[in-house]
Image (cartoon, rainbow over all chains, first blue to last red; front, top):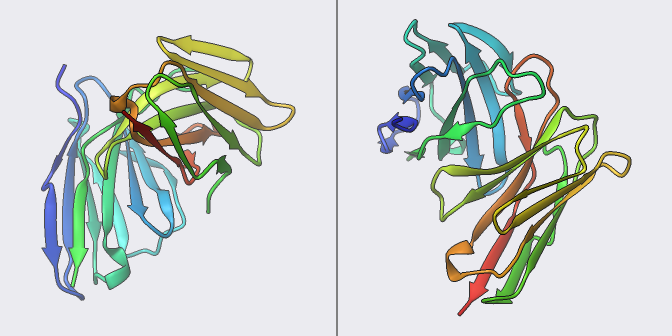
Length: 115
Length: 112
């Protein structure tokens, strides 16, 4: 099976702009989660989508939003970019329905730099 | 905010030695997972241990879980240069969503 893919891999944006990141999960996986990784805050959960519904959301401002399509592909949008949004954004997929939990498979990430 | 802490923050050992990393967490969990990350790339899943399990093995990896102490450890035996990476523990509270809460990680360096 092909792994989780994320596009683009690198992105440079200016403060105030908006950005959309894309994630294609492993075939058959219905859950897609997004994480932000920064040197200062580490890895932080943004949100998770399962069958096109947001099931959980982390403590991020409303400028961060996402959606999931019927083919399980997901997009994440950040509006009105700030310098502090510079980070590695990781997407993870899983089957999402295993009792006791299931491992998540991460993509290579999108490195966003805000100038 | 981080669920827990990892200890040590950095570890440097010689190739062939064993490496042990510890993770503590604060709240009840459904499972605990360990991941590896090489230099700012994506995370690779290593082991998942459920709250009713005490120990799991996978190749050179051994993970223990003590829910009474809210702690876990990852042991890598016979380390190799390729094991150089950051290792993260992540807890899953299992509240109906795939939400992992990560520790700050341990930076492991294997010296040849």
